[in-house]
Image (tube, rainbow, N blue to C red; front, side, top):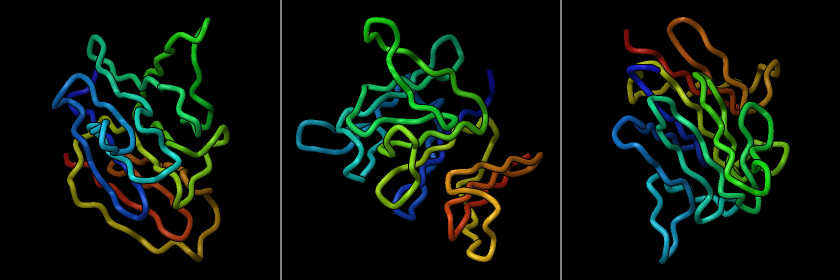
Length: 163
């Protein structure tokens, strides 16, 4: 259990930071006239009721609602349990979730990416041009003692921890 539980969402070049500890359940999806999710994603590959983040006994889980284009976590498709039941995924610091990227979790401008972070972070993120570097695939997270870097292809986001 951590004192800080944040979700960094990157979508269409914009970043959002959610302090998950503000409530026990966060619904994720696309806004419609009938649905107003807590974490509203605007890409059309995301379902209206895509999934949710839930705190259970001090641990954070992601629960997928089996949207058409799916969710990946740690590079693997989030699926259902036995008999189609909901199968929660326990989140760990630095976990990457890709919403709407299909079974392979393709990161592009038609998908949304989220990173679960258990460090105290500032709302300021540095966006860095990384066109000349090709060492890491889009969606890769690089962790160090004092920061987290999310590679998004031609650019990367650097999140510095507050100590």
